[in-house]
Structures are given as C-alpha cells and as structure tokens.
Image 1 (cartoon, rainbow, N blue to C red):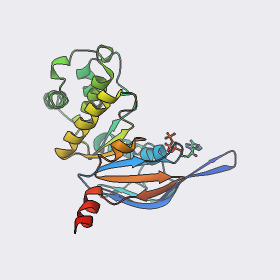
Image 2 (image 1 turned 90 degrees about the horizontal axis):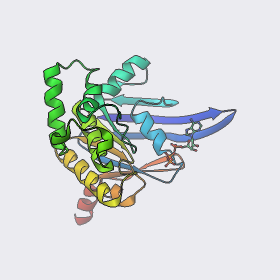
Image 3 (image 1 turned 30 degrees about the horizontal axis):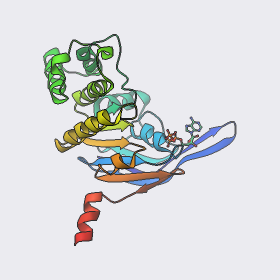
Image 4 (image 1 turned 60 degrees about the vertical axis):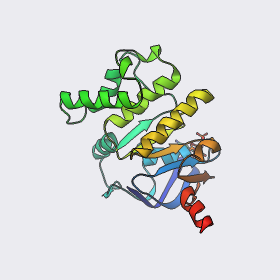
Amino acid sequence: MLKMTNLGKTYITDSVKTEALRPFDLSISQGEFVAVTGPSGSGKTTFLNITGLLENYSSGQYVLDGQDITSLSDKARSKIRNEKIGFIFQSFNLIPELNLYDNIDMPLRYRSFSSKERDSRIMQVLEQVGLAGRKNHYPHQLSGGQQQRVAIARALAGTPSFLLADEPTGNLDSQMAAGIMSLLKDIHQQGTSIIMVTHDPNQAAQAQRVIEVRDGVLRDARPIKVAAEAAIA
Ligand SMILES: Nc1ncnc2c1ncn2[C@@H]1O[C@H](COP(=O)(O)OP(=O)(O)OP(=O)(O)O)[C@@H](O)[C@H]1O
C-alpha cells in the first residue's frame, strides 16, 4: 500500500537545523493495523503529516498505491489525500454549524459521487458507528466519544486506502477511549488499513505492528502476531 525509501525530514529555521526524521525505509501493506508510538518531540507528528501528504519530506521517495508522490504537484497531492486517506484527529475537527449528515457529506462533495451514492455512503457509515438515528443532530449535542464516532464515519465514507489517526482517544475518558479502540478494531477486521499515533503503550499493543520513533529514528518492530507465532515455532 505504501513504501517509503530513504525518507527523511530536516527543518531549518534561522540556521538551526533539526533532523526531525532520520532517513528510514518502511513498507505498510493493505490491511495492516499499525501503531506509531514514542516520546514527545520524537517525530511522530512529522511522520504522520508526511504519511498523510500534509507535509513534504526533505529526501527520499514515497510511493502510495503504486504512485510516486515525490514529483507530484500540490493539486495532485490534495486529490490523492482526499481520495485515499481518511483522517481522524484528537480534537474530532467536526464543523459545529453542520449536522452529522452534512459533516460526513462535506468531503464527499469534492468527489465525483452522485447525490444518491453520497446518501447511501453516509447512511452506511452512520450505521457502522451506531449513530444512524442521530443524523440530524449537531456536534455539540453529542458526547466526545460520539463526536469521534462521527469523525471516524466521515473518514470511512470515502472508502480510503487507509485511516490515519492522530491520538484518536487523546480527548476522551478511559471508557469512551475503550469504545473508540473497539470500533477501530472492528473497522480493521472489516478490511480497512489503519495507521494510528498514540502515546499509550496499551493502545499500541492492540495494533498488529508497532513502529517506535525515538529522537527522529524510526524503529519498525515486527508484527506482534508474527513475532508470537515465530516464538511458538
Ligand atoms: N515546523 C517545524 N520547524 C522546526 N522544527 C520542527 C517543526 N515541526 C517539528 N519540529 C521539530 O521536529 C522534532 C519532531 O517533532 P514532532 O512534532 O514530529 O514530534 P512528536 O513526536 O509528534 O511530539 P508530540 O508527541 O509532543 O506531539 C521536534 O524536535 C520539533 O521541535
């Protein structure tokens, strides 16, 4: 699904050079659930922004679904971002003036779907996150956990190649956080690839594979399930 080769990111501000990500190689296959973890300032957000095509890298190559991103224009990148990546943020990022239905519809309007197809996609994802009966409600009428469910529905509606989640439970209490983790695991079981940044080692352990970032060095732990099977063999 995605392949990064010798990818690196250096910030230069007022002649101060920060090597946010030292050059690394990484492949993530369709259907994986990957957690990205590491201490504050280690480079997780930089990694996430590059993976989500929100930020450029300084060196190397990034190939997404067979397409080399390196030489694309900003417009072409935006199109790929909208079609292939579903974003989930810590702060939900719903539009307060729009009801749930219209929040989910918003990114679909930039795609070539008919209004009938958009409607069926919106209702399907609202069902999937258990909020079909609340489609006319506004974000402020929902709990934090429910708002995050809407954000997940919005991310899923465009059938992206993968979901990119940035601390998706960071603003939730532990019970709501457990509900969101369980929803993400269900979505993964149904075939969606997920890349999730988290500070929480317990959440990271629920993914199939953990990538650790420390001082800009990306360490790719082996898939946990494969490692466990290897230990038994
Ligand atoms: N725009 C920027 N200009 C200069 N340096 C930056 C910029 N963005 C990030 N950095 C630096 O790059 C390094 C990695 O930052 P990054 O935000 O990716 O870390 P993080 O692991 O996401 O941290 P946190 O968990 O606190 O969000 C840090 O040293 C940071 O100061």
